[in-house]
Image (cartoon, rainbow, N blue to C red; front, side, top):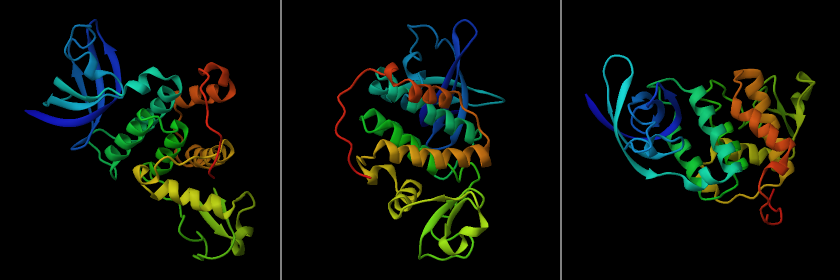
Length: 261
């Protein structure tokens, strides 16, 4: 049986002398894995369309076990992501996170749309660190974590001073601070940002400019939730941490003055 899917390549690994095993996330059927025969050969018609991050239309033959990738038609090769180390690093983190949190043939709530928006935003040279943060927050429900961000997780209050509680996985109002001695105090601006990252689609936010300190704060919270509640360990995250420690590895770019939140 042949099916044509719109998909994005999450992972492409060599298999044997000339083949690849590709994992792609499709709009229509969720995550799928297929054998791409001959795709390691440079002259193969499958060579380019099986590269990680490629967005295209794919013709898959399904049967018992793993399917076979018969043809591919590229829509976007994500050229900027391939040519920029920082973009590659954050895009790699996004696709690995989505790969690890989803099952074959499983479809989370618009995971394809999130993946598509994120990679295209990075390819259009929006801040890749901020885009990765959007994906981390929005993938929490796919990982089975549902933070309480619209009210106090303990009493339900919607007014007052708030803090983030890893114990309650959400906000606590000042009346309930005593139930978690390790909560993290947040400002009203940080509260709005957390809600924005969790609820607002990437394309509606546009070129949101965030200060480095703001991104570090948001990253610390969401990654602590992943570490304590999900327990995934990603190779691409280790590389991002290395880039944080040694920014001189990145080509020097002219950076605009920091502004925004």
